[in-house]
Length: 220
Image (cartoon, rainbow, N blue to C red):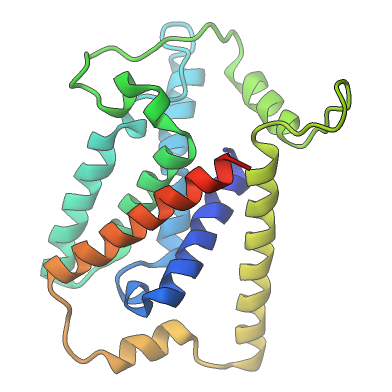
């Protein structure tokens, strides 16, 4: 997935699961969740495909590993316990969704780094910027050479854009009506801070639900 797919699909899954379990809105900030959904690419693609293009030439490295997401998650739990801060937990959740959406299980050497070795797969990409622009263009190009066919990233990108538009319209509606958001109402109803264990269970359920949802989207 690319820009719209990562942000929109992640926010869409958050919206559905938070409807089932409203408590999730008190421990996940959707703004930082969206940033986290792009975080691995924001780190790895400039480094691997531009800065170190001549040696590594790979946009999926350290930030596309479980170790990266898990480390951020542990840091997030610490700050939640000490300062009741949910931003870092939200970033970690978004970065984990990114791994699922990139189907990183197909590249176990990267996903489970460094358990299967210290090196990352290398590509032969001469111009990283041109390659990224090509991917973006390809995601929105219909292929009629063999009948009606869609590139494998077209559907996630389209779904992502639809979700982003819905979220934007909903935000504008709340802004114009000056109505208090549902998120704030839920937070006011909770007088006792949930335990870390409770939050871990909610987030684990969110991620499992997300994994199943991503697999369903990929199968489209």
